[in-house]
Length: 466
Image 1 (cartoon, rainbow, N blue to C red):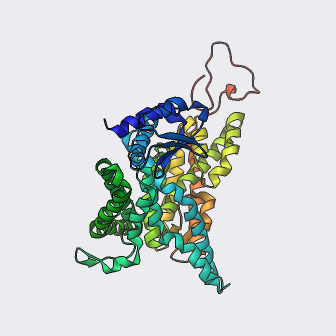
Image 2: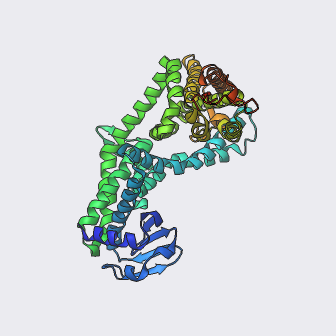
Image 3: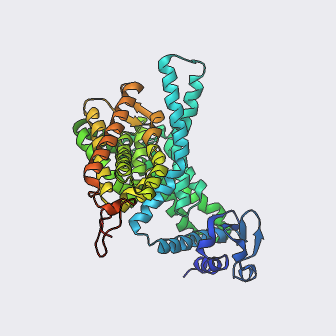
């Protein structure tokens, strides 16, 4: 094993183990750790670790390793922490990959939401001819983040995969730099932004690999100078003469596929997407859609997939309402539903999934039926030329209204989306009321009725036997 690995492995248990580490970063000479409980640190033993030059207990717990050395130890330390955490969660490689995708894009969602709302407000003011002196400023504020989103994706990618975040941002910045219009690759002149977030993601990943390769081979005395230079140079050239072109082709294909899907098979696509989204959320696989949403927003200004997927939450709300009506004597379940329903209406479905539909079984399936119906409703209008999209990812349910965008204006777009929600509510309610719960006919289902005869078995109102 490498000296860097040995140093990292020696440090980890002395700072309280992986569970005590909340953040990992480094500067030119120090490994900077966020620790949940500093009383768990064995400082005397830590100072005695070969390679540790000292410790500083400041806002972060800082372990002095020296220039060059710290850049090699940090990724080894991060990998050890991640490995132990993965073992504790029993995560599969697929789940780990999706979690990493989420860690890259989820921190960007607040900015996407804020800028998306402002973009919608600006569009409304322009259509109404109001505040002409303000709309140019609103336009700049709403679009500036999207014009540089590649830089943030690159920064987060490098951070997630154990590289230096600013180097990831530097490499990804090439994708959106106006000067790329002077570069020709594969006989085609590049365009600023070509490849979008996918190109930025690929560029930063390559940058991380180049950086790690350099850290292992460049002498410590030259590491500070050569590693950043080689990382930006090698990854930058590869981005210009390969990744931007390839990622641009993939991004265009995603946009073309989404348009074709809704134009030719909108109702069916809506049924499938709306019906399957709850199982995807339950398994955590919905995170794989985040880069697709981001690509569509960057490319077309909105994602046409999110309103379809949001219908799954409507089916869930309808199913929960039916359970509330049917199980009128189950005070515990009704209390859970009353607590979780407001969040469900705003698009936060996990409380209803894990507190209501999954424990009962059948209502989870009937909620999917409601989601499929709502998705089919919105998809049908897409086939008729009425497109409904969202300018940001994150919110759904009622919270998505301020972020809606379409090709026929705000009013028709909002009306179609509302129609889809109402369809999801209604179908989710009716199918759950009719098929989602077994018949509640036993006196035992009513706590005010007389007790059952000794030795008899009564039906559980949730569908089992007691």
